[in-house]
Image (cartoon, rainbow, N blue to C red; front, side):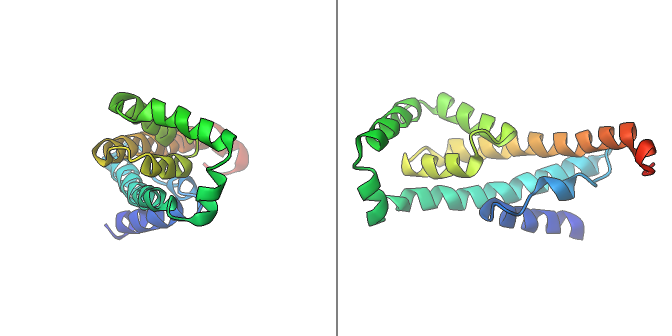
Length: 159
């Protein structure tokens, strides 16, 4: 239980501080049991908490004078308008973008979270799609690391 709680707390930190990688510690989790899902969910919940903080940072980012000044350029206005058209009033599309980012990491989820906040994406869409996507991502990391260990562990003297 302490390890699951530690995974949750570390994942919050990793969501906020990009140099802390959430996937590396998960690669050592045993597979084939409910514990893999418990660790994947704990890591996803922690990451979701961190990304919600980025979401709220996005809401308040428009108050920053240097960002408002940067937004005055034609390039930024056009980009913002494109994303606004893709997300605002389109919860399925917004959820799909967040889910894809949460699973694949492309575009980076921190960037998507800030953008979602600045565009005032519905938080009731943002949170569950990020949580579900991250849970799948982290479960795949746990299972994928086990497969790689099974394949290459004997060659490297690990198994």
